[in-house]
Image (tube, rainbow, N blue to C red; front, side):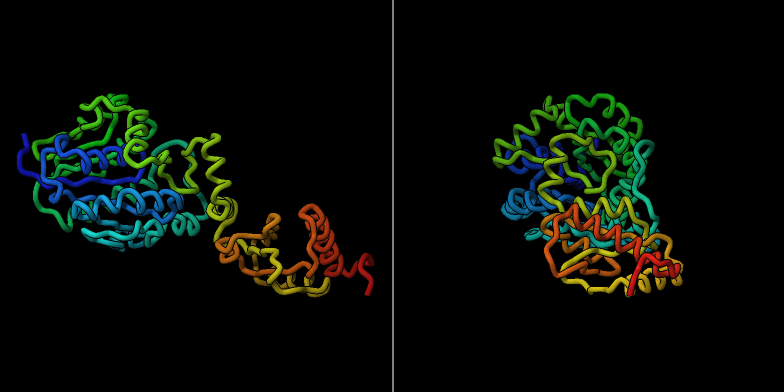
Length: 353
């Protein structure tokens, strides 16, 4: 049995890990180490929902500061492992949840021209979380470690892959709940003398419902699932749809990421954009063709326009008119003007000067 260890908590900011961390902070009797020895570490992918960062800043960081707990936030340094990791913050008085990350998962996906595929192994998690945390531990901790995880019941594949990546010298504490005996047995496959799995939520008999209730009891918050906005593994239900409506900018950014490759040319219709005549539009399209643009995409916003993050992705901003036009009419006018531009390029008789 390992008696001397560095307690490390891998904080994924989700339901199980939040409930487990809160109890460690709030109830000294449930832990076998001094809270000042604890190291909490988060791997920031750069694409977390905004409300997760907000809730962590409001309810978790003040408690970490109160107990003077060291909180390390790290991100991936770049595409290659040789790029290493980037320490976003390392403090016993953390003020911000660095959800913006450094080299973002969305940067990786945009360069690859795809998003994670549904099914199979979660390589995005291994690359942007497991690798990052394990690298930091290898570079900074040289004693035996008891490492706490907080995965939920729907994340068994992530646990197995993370176990494989992190298996090493550490004694690891997992935040599996009482409903996750299959995952517990999976984790025990990686036990070794200096790396033994530890499952406090199982010992406490806490399932996901109990974790949610405990968080609500302590913070008053209905804690939401931690996930990247573009994650295809998230269940599409009423809760996700409500979240997408609450954060339309992030949602639109994720949809553009899924629908566009890095080589696509995006034209955003925006009232602050440059105006074009029909002949000017025809020349604009021809220039893009001469530049070997593979896809020329025109994007129409809703009643309140496009989010600033979407506009930042746009290669060109085009103001169709100074008039305020209904959404459906804009679609019709745009379609007609694109048709007209094509006839101008072909010197057809549709357009009259």
